[in-house]
Amino acid sequence: MQVAVIATCIVVPVGTTLGYLLARKAFRGRDLADTVLTLPLVLPPTVTGYYLVILFGRNGAIGGPIHDLTGWNVMFTWQAAVLASFVVSMPFMMKTARAAFESVDHRLIDASYTLGHSELITVFRVTIPTARKGLLAGASLAFARALGEFGATLMLAGNIPGRTNTAPLAIYSYAASGDWSSANGLVLLFTMASGLFLYAATKFRGRLV
Image 1 (cartoon, one colour):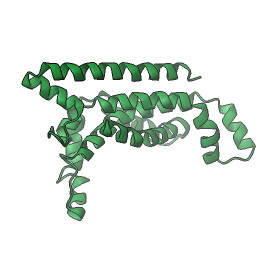
Image 2 (image 1 turned 60 degrees about the vertical axis):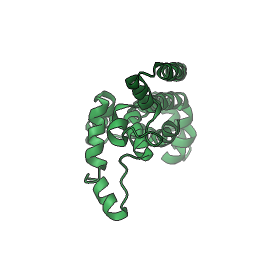
Image 3 (image 1 turned 90 degrees about the horizontal axis):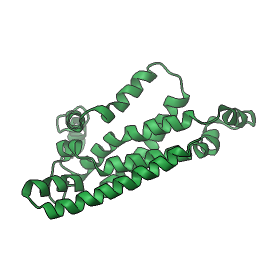
Image 4 (image 1 turned 30 degrees about the horizontal axis):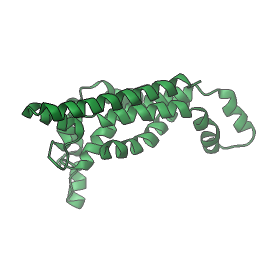
């Protein structure tokens, strides 16, 4: 829960911003950016985790300089689980936010500009309130995905008891050790939680327009 909540708190503003830029801004390479940012949605989680290790490992393109400056490395920490959950769940928020922003009536935005409001004020007073149900749907889907993240987390954070073993990793450990009662309990909990968030996302998305 800690990992999923923190990851979602980061995903919502980042995914909303990216969704807005992709929906409202015409720039060179927009389709390529959309494709790259959406890749974690279709790649196997272990492949996404491998890329994260390459980038954020001790000798990685990002992790290396951080380690040299601070002596700290994100791998095999709970922060690594947050990072993995953020990366795999962000496309859900971004794609849903883009669809929500694209559905906003342009006449409302034009009217705001006509009244002298800046783009920033228009975003917060018109665009986001009008698209809020779609944004809530994206946040629900992103949280559910972050809550169930397994492969990328295992690659980047490991499965260290008491430190990085999130609930999905715990289910795997219980099943591998034959503790089926504990595994069944967590599986049932996840099934109910996932169904709840999926239902909420469907209801919000159904009221998008």
